[in-house]
Image (tube, rainbow, N blue to C red; front, side, top):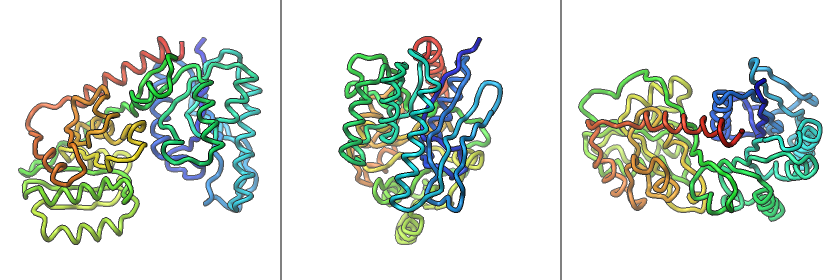
Length: 378
């Protein structure tokens, strides 16, 4: 009989927009879900995520169980549509309490349960583990107290859950030394998805470069890409797609375009198959967020794997988590955030040479599924 694996995280179905979650987390969880199924297990995905603040005028929503197929079901916690500051706390407390009692009722001693690490989930998971004695596989994407601490209380809980975990799934090799302390672990950088080939790069004699993702001035990935275009010649075309601070981006493109030999295009946001088709028209993908901030030590840029699965060559800042990864030898690095440096890395790429990024991602996918089957979930 196939064993069922419980997987807990703040999850919402992509595109729903009802519950608190992040697109990056949903994408990673979807991939791990499919890998668990491919490894030969049944899957019970449990989301204690509460309604986001945009959901209003709804009564108490009861627990929702979505039976996807005979091997996969998703259970969403009940939630309340509150949006005020005080009532928001009640909403969160309600969902986390539900998770605690769900685990008390359903978790078994020594059962392997995967939990996608979030500061909010630490307390109910820690308390339930202490009582029920299940085996905790903690999926750690980043150390939240390093990135944006919610409160010193949550920072302490984070340390406690790191100490209580029995094994780990890490997003970077650097987290192993920081947290594992000799316990079993496996590093999975992100979603090892190889996309179907819908189209080939545009054949117009030019090299097409892509920046895809969130557009903001803090990590500045899209803005760094624009500045680098000033140091590229007319043989290059820069494509930018994504969402965020779009008006600021458009204004900067208008300022730069008259003096840039490299053509710069912003084409809005693309999703699903439309995104795949758009991206596959390009030769090179840019991962150009600022090379500073503690998050760079423990958070792997997911867009790098996305580009590689699409067959694009990748230009990235030389940050440790990427350089020291299993795919570091396939990335074209620049040393500093200077636009000239980024442009120089782009210009070093010969797009006519063979490139095997898709094969690399396929191999990482196979290795992870095998690890789930023979070690992590055995």
